[in-house]
Amino acid sequence: MAAMPVSVIQTTIKTKVSPGLESLTIVGSPRALFRPLGLLRLLQLLSTCLAFSLVAYKGAWMGSMVNWCMFSWCFCFSMTLIILSLELGGFQNRFPLSWLDFPITCASYGVLFCLSSSIIYPITSVRFMAHGSARKYAISATIFSCIACVAYVTEVAWTQTRPGEITGYMATVSGKLKVVESFVACLIFVFISNPHLYTHEPALEWCVTVYAVCFILTMVIILLNLGNCTNIVPIALPTFLTSIAFLSVVMYTTAIVLWPLYQFSEATPGQSHRNMDATCQYTRPHSVCSWDRHLVVAILTGVNLLAYMTDFIHSS
Image (cartoon, rainbow, N blue to C red; front, side, top):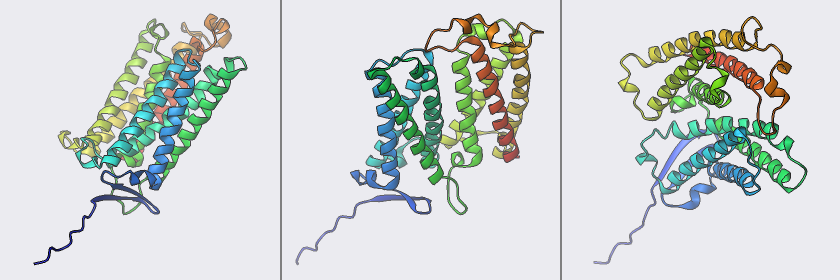
């Protein structure tokens, strides 16, 4: 009896994410890179890699704020590399975190990290550099950071929740707000990294407690959804999310009152004008003086309060 011909069919994993865009992974094949989403992630990978490489190569890495920028670019590069590697190997189903939530979460963080670096790096570093090759490299790094930001924005826009589609919690409005809330808290921690900014007043220490507690609660929600562990919550998930959002609104409301009051009011030990802060008169290049840090934290506190209020209204 003649042997029957055998045909080998390659396994594919195909997930519809939005009209006109599909995330197609062929197990063990580099063809996954040449899909629209794969090309977009290659652009993210290349842009973030060039951003931190140019800064490191020319030694244009001075000051604590540039540390944040370097961390941001390296973090985004690493997360995108992990996603591409998993898709190339077809290991999405073996990944311990929800694949419906993990890529969109990384892309959302990528937008915020690259956006902040594209603003902070020129303000705190590039403008202090003398004209020369180092400055040109630093400007190029800023441009690549902006390109990466646009690439991440494009991914988030393409993979946003649409009616009739199966998506994870992190792709919803509430999920993206959680990313914003946690990211803004991280920025606040960067600007209050020096304890002398708040340890002289119990009210300011309470504000720092607010930032830390709300950050931890938000990260718990994110991790529960990424790990598909929401079933361990002892109460109904919508009630849990609403309660956390309400608690955060209340706590941030106290912070938005106390932080400016004790930092900028002359009735307290605060300084109402920038020129009253001696550190701003003798600030070294590549650093941010205390008064400016106080102001940025006050603004970020207001931003996070608005985010938590929106989150509470949306989840109610």
